[in-house]
Length: 177
Image (cartoon, rainbow, N blue to C red; front, side, top):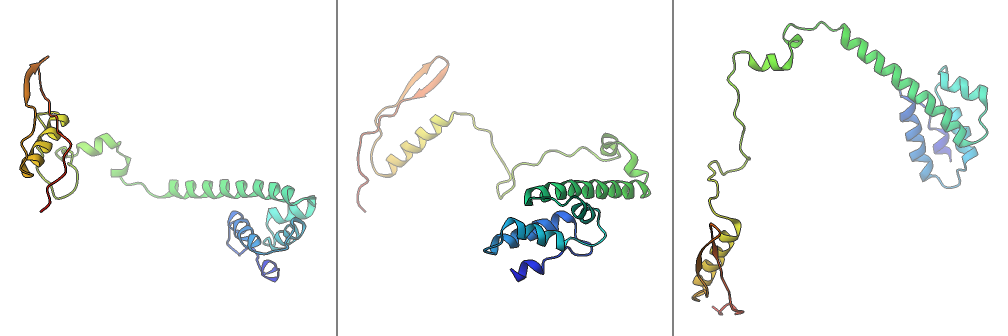
């Protein structure tokens, strides 16, 4: 319990970070009920903040009411921070290059880049001219030939403009080496 008492909001620590840190530590402490957490969070809030003033004035009755008040001030802090950040970015001097639209930047004296292929060690790709089924059939035939077996079945010719390979492989086990 003493560890929770020592948990206070740092000088520049955002309210959200303090509440999250407090709750992580409160979960690890056994015997800390909601009233105790409410008291310790209120006590640990940084002096002079609007959140601490409102919590002292409103006297929330439950821990959940306290968290609802704190949530409002967390949102307020984040909006103020976002406005400050936006204002700081607007005040930075913009260079001529950054004012151009993206499509104009792309055209500036550079040849358009061609798309890259997939990464890896293979640099040349040949598109397939036969179907996957035919490739798998060829692999099966090659495996059977490697085992010293002649495959049953053959090409049946053209049916509907495609060549179909019919391969019926009898159930056999691989010979022992």
